[in-house]
Image 1 (cartoon, rainbow over the protein chains, first blue to last red):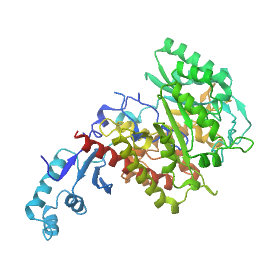
Image 2 (image 1 turned 135 degrees about the vertical axis):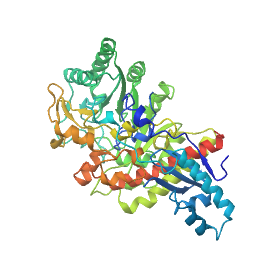
Image 3 (image 1 turned 60 degrees about the vertical axis):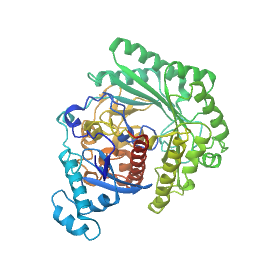
Image 4 (image 1 turned 120 degrees about the horizontal axis):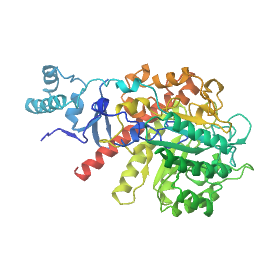
Length: 46
Length: 451
């Protein structure tokens, strides 16, 4: 059990280089006029 | 840069950028990360042993090396997935069903609805062709999206209704599924339209800027009168009619309300729970945001983050779009590179059927890509948009936020820098602050829940 560091998530970004890319997720607009902004706010649809 | 560390709301946080791992650490680890590079333990020991016990430093080093072994610290640079270089598939269009509006919002990027051209409504034929444009260009993808947009789309409900019926029929025929959204200022919402929108499972983006004086100052009717009272009444009824689901209330803050956290909380106080309030994009006007405003805006995001947490703990929480981060199941690398998809996966369609990279580019003639009858004729720009991702932009490649913002808004980059590869700086700064707040919130909520 780590005493000094707590990792709060299961990191997986690099794995998705090989597993992702299906493109079924929602479009993410990044302008200020729509609310589906910033890709980081999305959830994978798989 | 492979890590980003920050202190916020009592938490020392280290983000491992390339893996997405989020670590909450103590002060010793936080300070050690200023010099620890993965292979200089002796240097770290020499530096910190004057203030900390050697055994404690060794404990930390052991934990750090374990994280490195698990690819959760100093993880290597992400590569561009091979499939990303393949041809883009269209997945979404923004239908400008009305280039006209019944409000005269001061900050409107659409020139109060006409996008710098004549006011006009989209015909049913153009809407049908736009839907076919997606079907023909979306390949094997199942899920697609259409946003009914304007101007004010409720000014052309005839075409909206026709398009929805056409979409539902084509879904049956093609096996595609369309998620539908309508972005409205709320003026024309009534019981009959609410019923229609609810029956057809159309998500709503409803515009409300916050406090009455803030909203009325920027969102007047054509005659100059404030629209707040009518909009609040209408959106309340609309949201109630759909049991508080399937909507976002979104506002815009400007230099006139730099204390915008009060506007978010004012909306939350009205009982609305799905909120997004975003910075205006403007230059050379009295409401434009400038670099001088940034410290105050950063403080507002921190204040909002604290209020967000307090209300959640009391069971009176609300969702603020930019604080919603799924730390475990976020988008894949390909998605993070493609970002909004403007110009290659996402297109805007004008009332005349012209295609632009997105709704923000409509009216910028150098970005006209083709039309829904003849398809995309400009074959150069879509590829430029596709290649304009964070790993190809010099200012994004080394930014810690690169896999969360995906390089920012192309339209804003073009507006401010005349180059889609140079991001809009104020937008970047605000984005990074929102992300720090979001990471802190998600980390704290997980720690508090014991998960």
